[in-house]
Image (cartoon, rainbow, N blue to C red; front, side):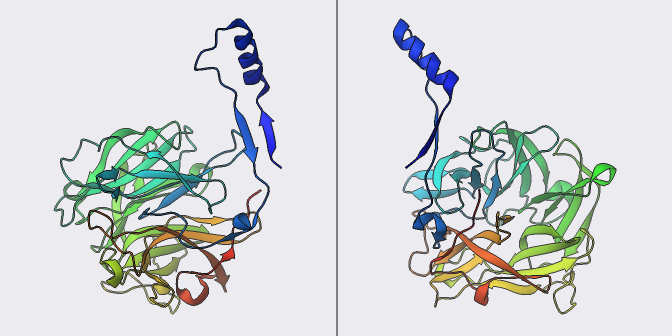
Length: 366
């Protein structure tokens, strides 16, 4: 049985216009429904979404229609021959069942002449209630990649490009991609930062109130062993998640995730054994790696961590299937994945340290 909510005013308007024979396309009945829990809702199995949602970022929207939707965003890629998605957007009610919604961009932003739109990150601004989409604009071996930002009233777009935040030449950091925006503190002490970098050091800079302008001098938090920065604040500590290795070597990918922690968002970040990660070539404490035994290799470039309504923590990321590693254009195929995080003595872990392939208990959201 479904719980169906009719929006009375819309229904009444439809009924009256039918009587009058003057209905317009703009007056439609709106139905909202919630299916009862099923086995498919209480269990999940990787992958969550195919064919591809590389470098994922997601957000849970405010409750405006009776449903708090999750929207996830991925790197530009060719899903089918001749079908290129420029920042594809998918949505879900429960993080388990996903459906394609739209592309964030119908055409690529114009501030750079060549390259793809990679590694998007979605942010809901507490200042103006708009959705801001940060993205990397780059090609392989690009000498001057950069970071841009777009905005929209809705999580599904359309997104209006605001232009370039910075590029390699203007910020003075080689390979300036894989940005991550975060706000921390409260009241007068609340600050916003943008972190970025790909195997040329991980850097940060304070951001202005307009969500686009940098403020102050950049600072370095990690050496050249990482890309795909994500920082999670928990219990007055900052957990840095970084990806190492090559993301895109198909079934041979050795992409992996490690973690380091700091008491201050600017660092110093240290692995579990106390080793700092500022030195080149140093990684954090191993968190997630591939295993051909479970059918998945190259896990990494994780999205956000979310706590469900039963107090369990989950992380989204991408990985590569052993037997189906490529998209039609020859790019590495990276479906959307999810696993539960277990905190052990203040440290995040995933069961066996590899992607799950069996049925698992799904997150629970009211």
